[in-house]
Length: 302
Image 1 (cartoon, rainbow, N blue to C red):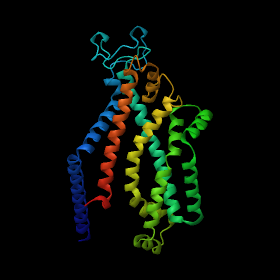
Image 2: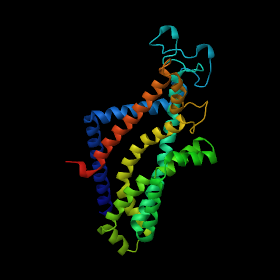
Image 3: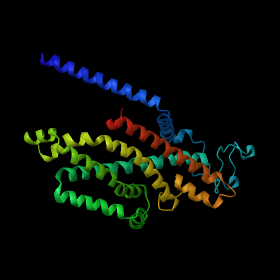
């Protein structure tokens, strides 16, 4: 009989999960802004994954005889370069497609580092309280007071500009929002009955934090992480624009903006198309993140 009840319970839980999934999908289809953001994000991810297949040219191949050619759709005499060429004759479209990889890798990796660090600190600070909480919060205040560009300059000057170092810089500056939100949630959760019951049953601090508190704070962490990916993409583009990011000839959106700023009056397409890609990607992620917040936060549901 116990086995039958367990099987029935598992079936009920599976049915509830399917109902929740169908509800989320219906709400996604109903929300046109979120659906558009998802389509944009899927297109960006597909471009990053299939870059070697869909890119028409080598993004680093130079052909000086074809430098500063306008977009092919605007000037048929420009040839097969759909979005034109840059000051070294490199195909803009191919460089944008391959630059998508750098933006997504850095954005997702930096969010993973920042989210893990901030969530752990927030859990420990909120649950332990006392001096541990004070120390963690003073550390977050220090990070908030430190200018991002100054820290990036210091770290990159010592370690040098590279993919790993950019992720490190963005990760250690982006954990503060996770820590503060998670700490606030834990301060509320630690007084709940299920935490008191776990303590009464002899559960240790590590078990309570990771088994009982962590699952209950994942919803705000997921929402913050979704929105932070967009911010990390913007920060990576800003660093590349300033010459502190990934170095040439690797194509990045920020680096393409920096290359095009000297040709704004004569070759507008050099900076326009990378800028549009950054804008659309960030907008799509933000729209999807706003919808995800509304879906996952029960306080916003009517």
